[in-house]
Length: 143
Image (cartoon, rainbow, N blue to C red; front, top):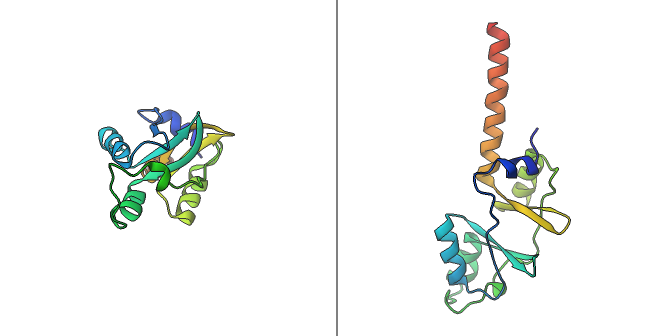
């Protein structure tokens, strides 16, 4: 069973995209669009202080009639960030995301952020593991 650390090591880009709490929502959205990602970490002095997602934008900016260009991220970010540990398994990460109903899960070793896993990352890894098991069983049966 793969761990969060292993999944992060396998990702094609391992850059952690982030903005500061003082960045505007518009700046954050620009970066998210440019990097084709669904969430950004909010970092202040190398410390994780929040996370901002497409869902946050829809619920806390659009539906509340706020202006993206003038609203600072600190006003709408999710400040209580739940992180996976590097040794959490795929299943444990999926359970956290399902229970808390979010699609992006930072992985941290203590206070050091190692990366972010998306639900897509976890589903792909789960499918790959299941395909491997199926191949092994088929090989065993037909040998």
